Image (cartoon, rainbow, N blue to C red; front, top):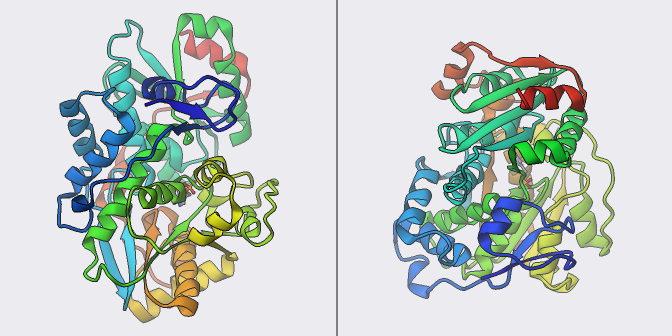
Length: 428
Ligand SMILES: *Cc1c(COP(=O)(O)O)cnc(C)c1O
């Protein structure tokens, strides 16, 4: 099966090429020519998670990775629990933070790294992945690629602009992961990485690749856990909504792919912070990207959501069809804090500021429409302790795997914010 670009100005490519390239040459996102439904018996019949995930993966990889290898990749990706927890009657939290870096991005990063590693297995040159990060993405990518053969990862992060725990996650991995602490901003880091990809000398001397979130192999595996969440529900007949705390909308779009493959979902709730480009689009029909504003749910501070192009493609640009499957609500920082406090005080459940927005969105939908709902808890609350603790007026337990990072010694090379310095480091 081929993957075409959502901008339709570049040739369709194999799955392998879509994964290795990341973004299409016309800057579009790769999109599969077909989305096949799963056989009926696979959904809601008590099948094991790995079996369902493998059946989903198979339909997108379409033979380009041998079955046994793909099975292994799926099992290595999903080697931690992804449980639903009933927070109150008919309201479930899908806890996506049980992975190594305590955020849902672990799923996409682990799957992508193993896909890439397979595709570059016959290259004689090591592949170097360059990532600029403002925090969360870098640690998931670093952990996802840790120890993966044939691949080296270089992370650029802005000095003094990530939390202590995030910095430790970026700088203490060792093995094939190294960190560059850039004396500058996140935008500087991103600009330096872009220049590296466009530098002919670097490209001739090194195999450079990216682990950007628009990569099909980072986006697609996120559909696995929608099926698994459904599998865990006691009542599979009652109307079901999923509420997704959204920034670039990769997570939500993966849910819509799951629905297209046969998962019975009545509604997707696009829950955002003040960066409300998509809720506004659903209201007005006008897509108006704009600069992002800062909020306490900073992983969703995105003013031009990249996966919007995939949503449009999935629905053939039909606004009514999109509205049929999806509603959108935006919430303020105070709404997020209030949700964290209320759910902690009344239900004894601790949410992070992103999951809190998803909870608020789900409650709003269910208030008007009933049924049951699942909100996606995308990060462990301890990753945002400085926001969560004052909101709930209690301490947040830091999981052992996060505490481990804090004990390790930071190893990073401090560089200036110019491409010349990055290039010198890369060329050794
Ligand atoms: C990245 C991220 C999101 C947003 O996910 P998208 O797929 O970009 O919409 C939400 N919550 C957390 C904690 C994240 O790290």
